[in-house]
Length: 106
Image 1 (tube, rainbow, N blue to C red):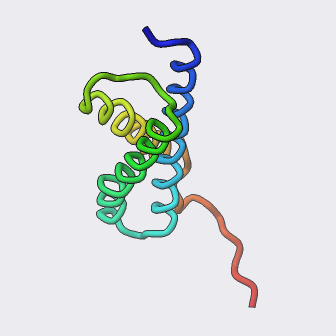
Image 2 (image 1 turned 90 degrees about the vertical axis):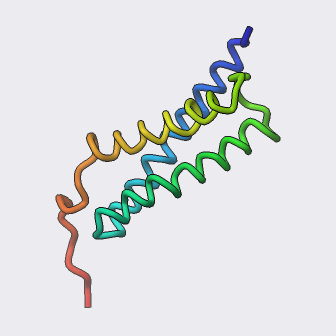
């Protein structure tokens, strides 16, 4: 049985992973003017960063609960926060083209 502290730490790690995925997706959408670049970035680079973060949090720091199988870890610690982060960026944050930026000073 998982302790309350372990479950709370697990939820904090999920929140951090969701924040990482949302910020990485936002950064790319601001920097790239392509659709395919964003899709490739979100599909390959964001999960790698979340995987490394999972290794750091669950390995040396020992944060989280035992999920049992590697498939459950992949689904809960990488796919779920990645999907939530991308959804937050795409659905709840304004598109980068809608921002009015000042003209650069000469």
